[in-house]
Image 1 (tube, helix red, strand yellow):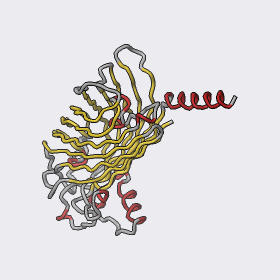
Image 2: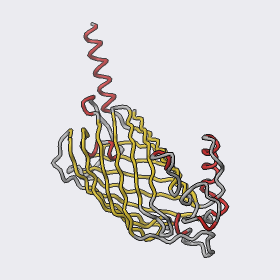
Image 3: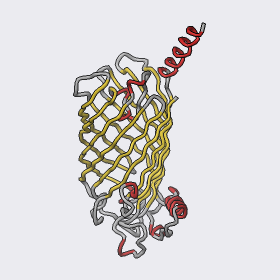
Image 4: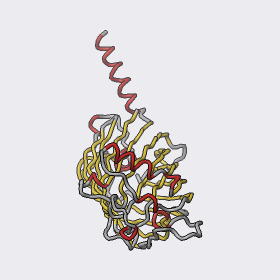
Length: 307
């Protein structure tokens, strides 16, 4: 009888693992996550996302996940505690947004992701309130740059990402190269990015890998622990956090000069089990504005729970 109960228990637990279809992810980004001496430009970000998975109803798409996300980005000049207008080398603003995203994996394990987002810059994005609250908590001086922030502006973006599977598929891998191309069109951001990610370690196939924030596994043997490096070239035609609202005909206090081509580089370490995952990413981005003294460096900490 005990043997039968044990079999039923483990069978139920295994079924529950296979049935995992929900995930909550929390992401915190900050320039000080790379160094306490690093401050400025993209200085803080936060997002929370709810993802749910469903079996695709067609013969082309093997797996599909949907996601709802809200988040905020905060941008300062080259140092958050600078106060003189003459020292401001990029516009000051927050960006508050919400989005819906869908990720599709076909039978070849290629990835197609699309997203619709809506957001605002300027005072309605609450950048000043959030940053000064954080500084109060960590006992750092209040940021006075916000009196120069961009005027309010609302916008909508549509984006798509494509990544073909080029390395022969297997359940668990130790090396992979993922070409990634993406494009965004809207009145907040209009840009395109192309690059390739190199993965080393232990990781699942695309549709069950935490590289795509999509770790769903029914076995402890399918846990992931890997390192990746993702260099990319980023081309931008419009960036409202640099240029202000597309529909604003007034001159901004601080005018940014859009940098049309820049380099992005991300290096991360990822650990994922059946119920949770944790990752850290160090990111470098070239000058968003040509007026900036240098590019921006920040860290990203990501934690996800699944059930």
